[in-house]
Image 1 (cartoon, rainbow, N blue to C red):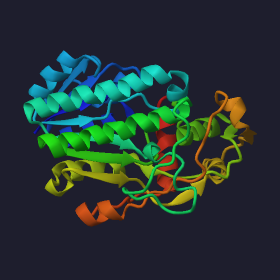
Image 2 (tube, helix red, strand yellow):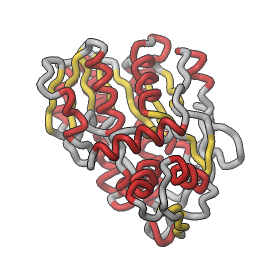
Image 3 (spheres, one colour):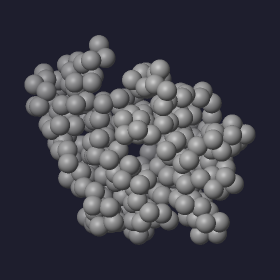
Image 4 (tube, rainbow, N blue to C red):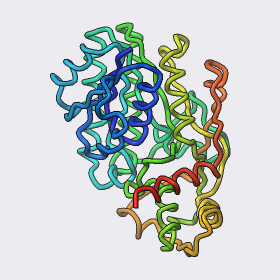
Length: 323
């Protein structure tokens, strides 16, 4: 199969490209390198099964020509990271809405299956009541005037567009909601907490924990997430469906910081930073976000295999290799 991977130079996208080529498929990457990094694809350069196109998903004619040339589309391109969303809300909205619309329109026109990468951010602050979030859970989001929620809104609309292209036009779509996917190649400066902690611990500088540190998350190793993507792409039962992809082991951010320092034998201290000092005024965070992954287990038999220890070790090994 020949796949178009938008955002293929990004963290998740590049790992998906590696896996597709490794199993014998060919890949065309479309990326403008706004947050993706070209050297994420170094292992594929020169491979006849790989082609890189520098360009934007906002270029509708370019998207259309590329979609027409492949068998299937994996849409990972998006404005990502809390800092990006808060600092550049308009640019992020346009990228996440218009870009996805371009991909879906071309996929529908040419009859090409498409997988849309969505996010646990669509749930907003739902899940703080102690319940795990399943694919049918209600969303709880704040005022549309706050940039914090614009990413959630954009991703929710992306999902709606994809599902209605499926229901009204018969487009084979698959939707994946990623929960805090982490691992090698992820960078901390977009607000990603695990690489940020690991980089600080390795450097012996303080780990900055925002807020109380009692907010909790679940972290999924990139190799597990990629395995889920490939299994969903191959599964006819996944068409027209949305799936949570994540690990359901929960840890508070404060405990995560302590674990990183301990596991890496770091001398770093842990500093508590009020939200108002870390983000723009009015920033709102969710206190708990835990996925219910029973649906994907039932439909395709996927479950995560990697725990937090191997996640921290793999990120540290990668970080050390970059210096």
